[in-house]
Every structure is written in structure tokens, then in C-alpha cells.
Image (cartoon, rainbow, N blue to C red):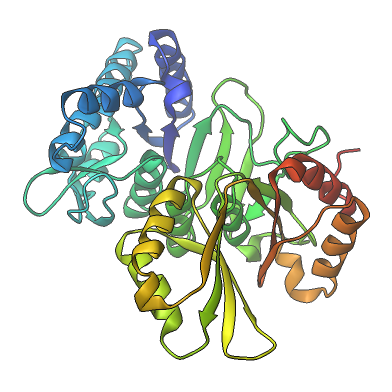
Length: 406
């Protein structure tokens, strides 16, 4: 029988009525002859409430105890959905991460999955039982509960789909698929029928909130076909598949933007070996991720200006750290700007077509939008611009690359 893993996010299980609706949807899949495993998130708002409780008790909390608290949200949902399925006559049982087990490293609140022993789940599915699995959680080698970070239930679902050798992993959310851009901003954005793993990974990494980045990486590495679809409408979603499955690849598949960017510029940095390591090494040790990097050598050749971006939430920490290291790094001044946005165009068709970046630069220039930083990859071009122009840039580029719905 075809085997499916179905994951339902927080809005899909926000209350008892929605949990019952999810149970009915799962029953239809079972009645259609599928073997089904279900992964659930906490009910909408539950995780935030649990985090607030933990912070109210102790802001400088023990991260392992923090995971015990926040993992309980998914436990509640899993139990409720198993009960709802049983009420409909569907054999079901809830499973927590440690019961499977989903083994992770010990990085509490951001753990990574090391291994899944899916033998008990596999046996249960063969016997006709629907496993209802608490997403977002696992167990470390020391026996403590771990959590996978925000969006971790997507990662759980894809990892389980790989371990169970599922035919597909369905991710149910509050949108009905992946769009060429944010339809709340670009009114003529259209839903994609298919998108490649690489394109989805780039979209997720530069602002698209449909899928969590790590889940897309897992799906790509293990060849798990993923479908993104709505919990609230019975309409086709978007399939995330390997490049080989897409017959005709679009030149550009999407335009995204991320407001979670801040720019830092170090002026008059000594131009000598080891300086870059002296700057980015301490930032890495502080778990501050650096994204776009541009270096400009002075006319004299003895100093350089270095510009890079970090997450907006890390800006203050990054600047303070660089100030502490001023004497060892050797630079004249540090400037920062949180009023920037990163806009990206993405498409596997870029590999075989020249001029995509030039087209982007020309379109933005025609609208009077100044580009501050540029980075490129094989299937993506990203620019950093003033935050005030984010929506104008997204709409302009969406039209420029012929993505507008008819």
C-alpha cells in the first residue's frame, strides 16, 4: 500500500474542532488504502505560551529543562489527535520522540537528528495502526528530551518519511502551496505546481516561510518527495521534487525578500593575511551567522572596507563583539544599519541562461532603487536594498521575469 507521512502545523490543530477535522482528513487517506503516519505541531500559540512560562520562572534557564517544558505542547496535540482518530474507528496511538526513538545530539533547543529507529512505527503501520507522532522533539544520548528549534516539526516529518521509506511527505499548513512570491505583497503571485528541492531550499533560506530550511535539506538529501498543501481547502498543493522530475524548468521560479537582515561595515581594515579570520572567527564562536560579504580595497591598497550582513536580532551583539576586538582586528570605525532588506530571484533555469542578474539590476535602477550589496549562487541572485523599497522591488522583479498571474 502507498505509504504517506502527513504533518499538520499549529494552525491546522489550533483547537479541538480543527483536530477533529484533521482526524477526518487522515481517516479519508486510510479509507483510500494508504498506510499513514501523522506528525503534529503544538496547538497554535501553545509553544509561545510555554516559552513565556519558562522565561517567567528563570530567564537564564537550564536549556535542557527548557526543552522539557516546550516539548509538552506537541505531546498534548499527539494525544488529542490519537483520541479523535480512535473516536472515528481508526486504530491510532501517540508516540513521543523518545519512544520511537528519534536520537539527536545534545544541542538543546536546536538539536539535530542523528538517527531514527523506525522499526516499531513500521510494524504498527503494517498492522493497520496510525502512529501520531509529536514533532519537534527527540532524545539525546544522555536520555534528556531535546527540541529541534522553531519549525522543527517539518524536520521531524521529513526525517520520518525517509526512515519509513514513505512515498510522500505531505506538509499541511495555512497556505495552499508555494507561490512565486508572497501573495500578500505581490497580488499577481501564482501558485507553483512543482518546484525543485534546490529552489525551495533557496526560497526558505531567504525569507519564504512555507517550509523550514532543515526539512528541505533533509528531503533533498534523502530524495523524499514533499507536498505543501492547505489544511483548510481541498485543492492541489505544490510538489517539491528533484530537478529530474520537472520537464520544463522556468528561468526564474520565485522572488522573495527577507526583512531579517542588518548590515555592518568595518572601515579602514588593515589589508593583510588573517584579518578576515580575526573578524569572522569571533562572530562564529558567538553563534552569529554571517551572510552577504563584500570587500573593497582602497586606492592605496593598504586598507579595505568590509561589509557583511547578520540577522537583525544579532546586530547589537555583533557590533559589541567587534568593538571589543577593535585593537586585535585593527580597523578605523564600525557602521551598522538595520533598515535594509535582502531581495532574491531564484530559479534553476539560471544555470543555462545568461543575463539574469543584469536584468535584475536594470529593473531596480529604473525604479530608482539603489543596490548596496550583491551576492550570487548558481540558481540565485540576491541584493541588499533600503527596507523602504522592499515591496516595490518584489513587485517590480515579479513582473520583470514574467511571473505575474494572467
